[in-house]
Image (cartoon, rainbow, N blue to C red; front, side, top):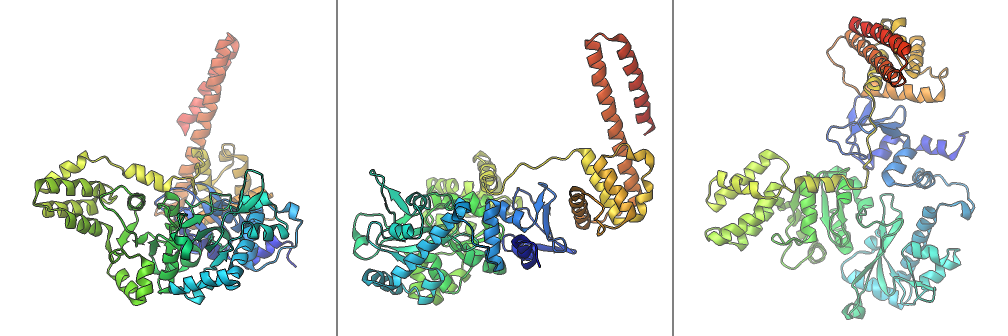
Amino acid sequence: MLASPIEEIKNRLDIVDLVGAYIKLQKAGINFRAVCPFHSEKKPSFFVSPSRQIWHCFGCQTGGDIFKFVMQIEGVEFGDALSMLAKKAGIELKREDPKLKTERQRLYEINELACRFFEKQLNFGSKGQEAKEYLLSRKISEDSLKKWRLGYSPEEWSSLSDFLAGQGYKGEEVEKAGLAIKNESGKHYDRFRARIMFPVFDLNSQVVGFGGRVFGERANKEIAKYVNTPAAILYDKGRILYGLDKAKVDIRKKDFVILVEGYVDAIMVSQAGSSNVVATSGTALTGNQLKILSRYTNNLFTAFDMDVAGNTATKRGIDLAQAAGFNIRVITMPQAKDPADVVSADPQKWGVLVDSSCSILEFYFENTFSRFNPKVPEEKKNIAQILLPIIKRIPNQIERFSWIQSLARKLGVRDEDVEEELKKVKDENNQYFSQAFEEKIGTQNIAQKTRKELLEESLISLIIRFPESSSLIQEEHLSFLSPKTREILDHLRHGPEAELAGLPPHLQDSLSLLCFKAETEELSDADPAEEIQTSLKEIRSLGIKSAMDDVAKAIKKAEEEKDKDKVSNLIEQFQKISLQLREV
């Protein structure tokens, strides 16, 4: 019998499957590796161990089990991670006192109940039926209505609030979920009324917010077409991508994501067979969203209406993706149509448009040259002003030079002339890259280890891989090693990693992690005995230098106190230690 729900969850869920649902993992021997989602890096230093069921990044020095990973990647407390993983494992946690539930748990419950409420309204009542008929007229299928859990919010002022109050939730909680607004008299009323409701899900398919769209006669009135959940504890529009929970598996399989602007666009494109689609839901593409997408693919297909010459939010988002190293292609829409219109008119046409997509640079070039005459000097200048900043943002130097040559040919000038003008363009690459990959999502201060700590870890790693070399560590070396390292090395002389019972828990964790590290390191051609001797020599040298620094500080203090005898003794001590350094 398992000791607790935590152990049962760990027993049912495999860490490789769990982590692999968030980031791209590659097989690396008996382990898996990836680019770390918690700090910026190019060379993968994030590893997952199936045998130990742990993960660790040897770059930013973070790691742990499945609970720690979900807490880090989702930015939640342990209780919320427990609930998420229990749901994923199909384990029902014991009923708990509502007072003991975390605030996030109660907000998740409120959103889920609201979603069910709206779904029910869509299928019952005259107004709900009108909303459903409107959606079906837009060619959204019954299956899609269920898959995306679309609903309807009644026109009454407090129908949802009254329903949630009957379920035991306070008006303040409903307000925190973004579903209610407090008036001047202190009473709460529903934020969403007489609207088609689009629930927004997080990566675990939990409802975190809503978008409400007017329809019918109300669409012609001077009211907002869409109302969205405001920034809330669960909902951050700069991090959410509509439909990613449903698309993430197919994005990884197809190795590209289709990016559209609205809820209906995403639903219709998915319905047409492109299930690797997500929507920004009316916001500009953010660095946080790009960081999340980079876990699944670096290939991005856009179906946006972009103003090449303008500085629109849409174009700035694409510029951000370009500077962050995404391979971007553009799905060109027919005049004045969006993806939903195309699919509604002819679902087959959508696949043709995807297949005929062009690279972002090709799109920019074709669009710009179609609007200006390269034979007219003033318009030639306009072309350069639009395209040079775009070329400047290309991270790869070879690709950048190729487009410089292309622009020079089309303008009828020398490559050198284009390069000279390019130098005058302000370099936004660093700004864009920083914004894309150093925003609050997943960034953290990397723990810096001392040279001695790194050497001792390397020494232990070598002994793990080459246990016969442990005899090289003599008594004279031990005094320069940390107590922790001495205890681990002593243990390794008597038994393999599996025999951890004799070690204290903190040393068991340390040894397990070092064994994991040893598995992930590539074997060098160097003689392990020489590497061990070199490491021991440097550790001893660092120890002697540290002792010399301590004596030097003591000498300075004795001189300030004008204690001549102490100064004399310390100088003699310093000279003896310095002789040891020469011997090393």
